[in-house]
Every structure is written in C-alpha cells, then in structure tokens.
Length: 478
Image (cartoon, rainbow, N blue to C red; front, side, top):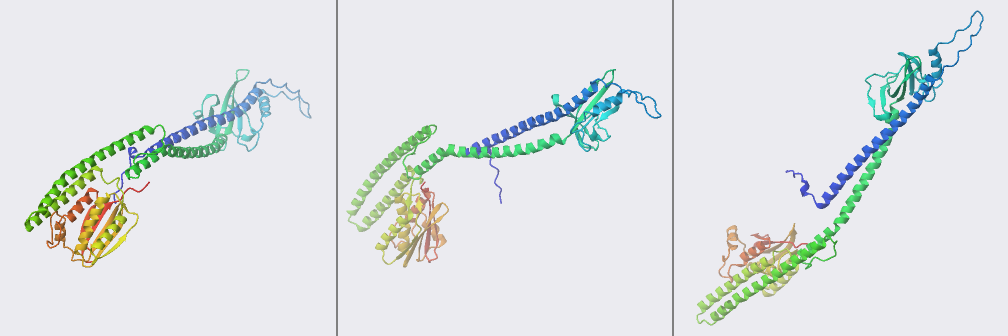
C-alpha cells in the first residue's frame, strides 16, 4: 500500500490557510501572555515574601541598635554577695528574643531567623530549636532587584529562601541578620495560580480558535456561493453567474459573466458556421441523389444512391463532431438517459414487432451528452441488436461511479473476438446480405469518445452480442 505524501502549505485551501495562520497566532499570543503573567506573579509573590522577611530583619536590627537596658542593681542573697552586671551579649540576646513573633516563634515552624555576632550565633528564633541555618557563600540567587532572595538549607535540609542584612554595632563590631522562609511559600502559590491561569488561557485560546473558524467560514461564504453559481452555469442550469456578492467579489462576478457571454457569442458564431457548412454540403448531395434517381440503369442508380447516402452519413458525422467541439465539450449538456432510451425502444418496437424489447432503465441518470448524439448512439446500437436478434433485445442502464452505462444485448448469434475487432472499423461489414454501410458501431464509438465515454463489445448472457455504452454523468443540479 502506497503512502500518500504529506501535503505542503501551498496545497492547503484558503479556509485552511486562514484558520491555521490565525490559530498559530492565537497560540503564540496565549503562550506569550502566560509567560508574562507568570513572570508578574512570580515577582509579586517573591516581593511579598521578601517584604515579610524584611520586616523581621528590621525589627531585629532595631533591637540590636537600641540602647541597652540599665544594669540591674546587685541583689543580696543568703550566702551570696552582690550580683555583677550582665555582659552586653546576653543583654542583646534577651532584646532580640523579645521580637521573636509569629510565624518565627513556632517551635516546629518553618520560618527562621538568626543573628550572628563575631562568627557566633548571638540569637535565633524558637523555630530553630537550637539549630543553625546553612547559608553557603556560593548559594544561588532567586530573582533580582530589591527583592532578590538567597537560597539555602534549613536545619532539616529543607529548601529555604533567605534575606541577609549586615549591621554595624557600636564599638566597631559587625552583626549579620538572616531571615528565612520555606521555598514553598513562593512555589506553592505560583503553582496554584499558574494552573488556574493556564486553564483559563487554554479555554480562552480554544474559544478564540472556534470564533476564528466561524469567522473564516462566514467570511468565505460568498466564495462558496460564487462557486455554486459557477457550477450551475457549468451544468447548464443558468446562463450567467447570478446573485449579490460583497464589493470585493463584484468585479470578479462581472468578469466571469463577460467571459461567459463571450463564450456564448463564440458558440453562436461556430454554430452558424456549422449550419452554413451543412447547408453547403447537403445541397449538392441532394442534387446528386436526385440526378441518380433519374438514371436508367438500375445497377448504376443503386450504386450511386448508396454512395450518396454514405457521403451524407459521413458529412453528418463530421458536422456533429464540429458541433461538439463548438459546444466546448460535454460539460454543459444534461440529457435524461432513461427518457431517451424509452422513446427509442418504443419507436423500434413499432417497426419490428417480431422482437421483444425489454427495458430496465434507472431513473435520474443525466448524461453530459447532446440529445441528438445520444439518440444516434442508442439508435445505432438498438437497431443493430434488433436486426441480429432472434426474438429478444435487452436495454438496461446503471450507474458506475461518475459514468452512466447503457447495456444493449440480444439473443442472436453474437460475434467472436476477431469479429468484434473488425466491426468497430469504419466500413467493415460482416453480413453483406443485410442493409447498411458498416458505419453504425464505429460512429457510435467515436461519438462516445468525443464525450469522454467508451463503447465495449462482448458476449451477452442472452447469447448474442452485448454492447456497453459508458457516458459521463452530468454535473448534479446545485
């Protein structure tokens, strides 16, 4: 089985081109919109997390830079002396612990902060539970600008985003504040919103593509109407392209009607020439036949009359070919095969009552053949069948694809394959005892070929000769 090669873009219809190009544009627009919305949402969520961490850092920085509380007076105790003042570091640690608010103060929470002083941890959030944050020097950054976040690992190895702040303390000391949030505070909302945005944009894109398809169909509807009108002209139902069309198609309609009118004028001129030629040839033939009728010798008279009849038949045949060529082919012909077959069968039955002519004609078969040519082809075949039949002739019509097939069969002696090849040659007769000139079957085959049909001869189931005349069907009425 051969595979059909893929169609190129140049082979696509106008409707497919417009729909495909618009669909690609919508797809690109939806993807770009999704990327822009995702970027804006990521910046917004990152800014919110960074802002929350900055608030905690600011509170811790304020606690570091606030004046230390006055030393508590020494207290007396049994067996104890006066208590010395606390060192500065524990005082700072107590001050920092007072700003350990939600959500950093949850013992098993995932928001953390810690303050480092001179390479040691001065204070940390309760959520760390005595553990430390791991911030590597080569940790990648998340985003840029003022809301840039660092990435690191939590005490249990969980992914974190962090903000860092260096603070200069009195006395030349330097502290570092770290505030961290779980990476999921950014990824989770972004994932949820991204899924919703993707579903919304997908639905919007599908609606846009459907609307574009409907728009293309509506916009190209006048072209479909124009094609239908041309088909009606082609099938012979109309003489011109009728109907109202948009302004863009009106010039095309006028040009088509002008071309059709010019073709009709050429056709009328050709028919006139054919008629003049027929008159110029038939008049001398009629004169020759009249002169032959007056000849005294019977043998010479019969021979000249036969020759005159043969010449008349050949002249009519070639005039018919010229008329068919003038019609521009069989496209605009529309002839009812069943009706003409019934009429010919009824006529022949009257002239030869010894033959029973059976018909089985399918209704609704219209052939793209001139009615006179159809009558001559069917007449030749039926006349030949009746002359050689013993008692029965069959005429059947069927449809095979784009052709109508007329089957004419008789119960006569039939022909061999060699004889069949001989009878389709002009002037060849197998039975000289019967009237005729041997041009019936060749003329029928030639006329059928002019219309794109064919004539096939063979052995009939009835016992005699079977002729299958295949003719093209006319374009259906639009």
